[in-house]
Image (cartoon, rainbow, N blue to C red):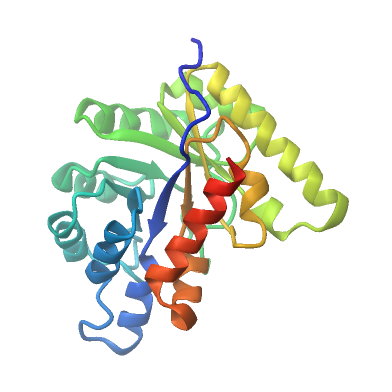
Length: 247
């Protein structure tokens, strides 16, 4: 396969999970993640990401249909590779489903999915999602063996985990950045659209955004945190500006 990607406008998907986290801390309906999705749409965001976890710690089942009804932005459903989540995805028919690792005890998604080691488990789930017309992606570490596994699974998209880069300093950060760039190029050469996300901030996003093969960044926790101080509209606009400057 050959790449069909070209360096263009880098899409910004906004993960609104943590609006729901705040809502769920007190119960009730406020703050409403649907309102966050509408704000993202109004300020030029390119997509909404929501992770429906097994324990429903933030996004809830009923939020999915409400988000889809409230905005025309494509919904990217982050989901574990379980039968329950597969059936929910097939019922709601999001634009995209990103398969992520999930452990009940973790505070957030730690590390990438081991697509290479879980091929037999992932293959039927990927196939059913694809057959339904849902774009499938895998949230993976920037490693060649994981890209190769994505190729074997015939997924059209991978999202490269940028957590190691985000947490690194000095020379190690440069090493991690090169690893992401190399794996984005490897994916693109093989016809897979590379995305990236996790731990990205105003301070570290531009080197990632400058990687020409990347088509989309998904950012959530940082933007919701900044929104507490500046408002969600301002936070999304500033991230959008920084991404555009890097291109």
